[in-house]
Length: 478
Image (cartoon, rainbow, N blue to C red; front, side, top):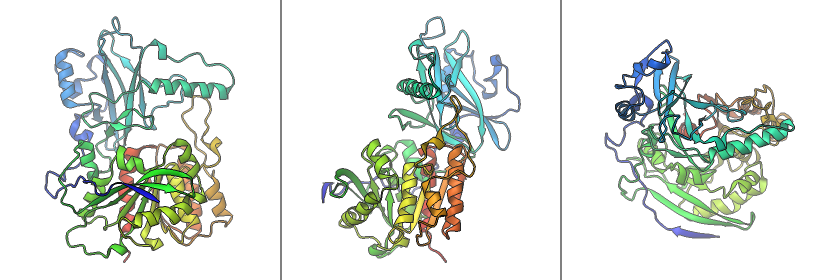
């Protein structure tokens, strides 16, 4: 049961020219890097970047805009000092109503604090800045939230749980004022709360070459007809709902002549993200043309909304029965692909990472490969995520959620799976839960490629891991 929207849609196709294969912009190229082992005094803290003029005058701001922000100093081989800057459009403190410029750096700043991190104003100027030290290979998103006195922290009262919930509501109000960094030269991204966020790629962050066209905001590279993208509606009788899906098949690399019925099937959960917010089509096309990925069929499934996402992606057998009985046959009417479990990947992030792992463990006869990124393996024990009021997060070595428990009890006797599992080095208890599950997966005989990346619970990190995971899962064994 389906309804086609556009039978054939033009796909941005990266061409095989040297200009099209440039790497994505990083702070190594868009910001000034300088060696500094000591923290400058406030009056000279920007001297290392060679900014002319007086701090906050027009010449200084013009030079800063040309360099782009954040500013990055190399401390040593493993660390970098990062300075975030915002210009107050109202002027200095005598004229401006701005009282804080909160900064939310994914998995770095503590947004659960009663008094979250703010940039600080340089007295007598329109310059707000904050500096921190990060690993030189860090990558992530951040946003700025300039606020007036109306958004300053209230006085918290009541029980710890009440104060925790009040702080959460207040922070959501603050983030309604959030903006992308106007001095960051890279294209902003859609953030989880619906606003915009900026990207930060430190100099040693792993390359994400396939995403350079997305970073550049370039939407078209010509279409030679070699790739296919079709957008459909999936009307599910089993689930009683209707949603979009996207079926994508990249152009094959020159010389490939694979039987379409042997092409791998890749199911991408939270498909609306990979289809619209951070479109993966050009990245998948690039990797296929380069021969890094074999020709495959990608099916992206819209998660509809937050409530439906929580219901369907949390180890829900009815959802995966509907995927097998309804969605896969629907996608097969668009283009052929393999029906073998070893040729089928389910990929997901957060709740999607949990769902992908569950699909493989519960339905291994159809889903033989799993790509799980920052999987929510705390489920259903949400209390594992709770930290003392004001504390960013906790570590809980050895803790496990339902999937790890069932594996340990021998209740998930799946066929051996190929699993690419990753989690961010700044995800605290999520690391413990992922590592506990990995141990149980390996004990059960599954082949796990486990990775820890320098970053947080962040789509900007996951997009790189998505490509790396697909490469590993789709490589042909010797």
